[in-house]
Length: 280
Image (tube, rainbow, N blue to C red; front, side, top):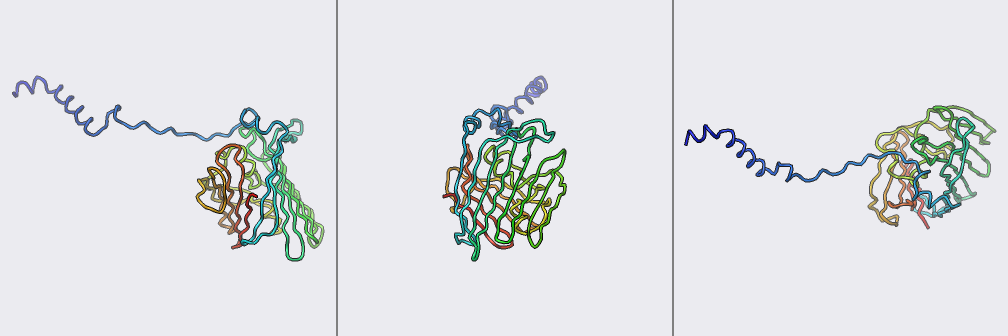
C-alpha cells in the first residue's frame, strides 16, 4: 500500500484537488457567467437612426403641464423640443442641436408671472457635451429680466439685463461646467448620459432670476434611478434628482424609461417651498 502511494503520489494529489474543486463548485464549468458591465459613453445622435427617424422630419413636440405650488394649481407650463442649428464657437460652423423651450405662466395674487428658457444642446455629445446657448427671460409687472449664456473657448460668456429698481447690465465669464438647463434635453437624447454622483453644476437660470443673483457654480449630488412613487404616471418611469446642499434646493425630473424618453413631470423644493409640474 505504501509503495502504491509513493509511486502514484502526484496522481493522487491531482485527483483529490479535482474532487475538492468540484465539491466547492470552483471549476470553470460550475461558475455562474459574469454579468456584462456596460460602459456609458456619450452618443452622437446625428448618426443614431432611431433618434433621427423620430426628430428629423420637422417634428415639433410640445407637452403641457399643470403647475402647482404647495399642492395648489397656480398656472400652466410647457416643454417644446425640436431640431435646430446654431453657430459654433469659432463662428464658422453650423451645429445641429436639440432645441428646448421651457415656458410657464404663474398666476400670483395680484399679477401674472411668465418666464421662458431656451436651450440649444448639440446632438453630437461626444464632441460637444454641453449646451451651446441658454436664453432666459422673465416678465413681471415692474420687472423685465434677461439672461443669456454662450459657449466661448473653454468657458461660458454670460450677459444679463434687468429693470429691477434700475436698469442694470452685466457681463461675466464662468468656467464651463454642467448646466441644469441642459438636463431636460439630455434626458430626451440619452438619459444614460446624465451626470451622476458628486458634480459641479450651474443651477437653472429661472432659479437665478427668482433670487435676483448672478449665476454661479455649485456642488450637487446627482442620482438616476427607477421611480417608485404614485404622484406621476407613465411607462417604466425613471427619476433624475439633483440636491444642492448649500442652496437647500432639490430638483427631481421624472420621465419614461424608453425612447423617446418623454418627461412626465418634475418637483422642485427650495427653502421648504414645493413646486410641481405634472403632465396633462
